[in-house]
Image (cartoon, rainbow, N blue to C red):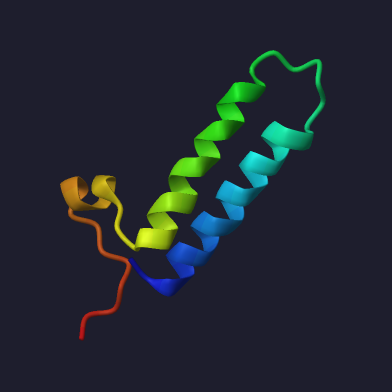
Length: 62
C-alpha cells in the first residue's frame, strides 16, 4: 500500500469516526460511521485484504 493511499485512508477513517462521535444525535444510522475504523486499521498495518483479492497495488515497485 502506497503512502498516499495510507494517508487518505487515515483521513477518511478519522473523519468517519469523528462524525460518529460528534455528529448530530438525531441521525439514526450514525453507527455506519464506525466503519471508519476499517480504513484506519488497514492504513496502520499497511495491508488491505480487498487489494490482495483484486490484485491492486498502490505501492511503487522496487
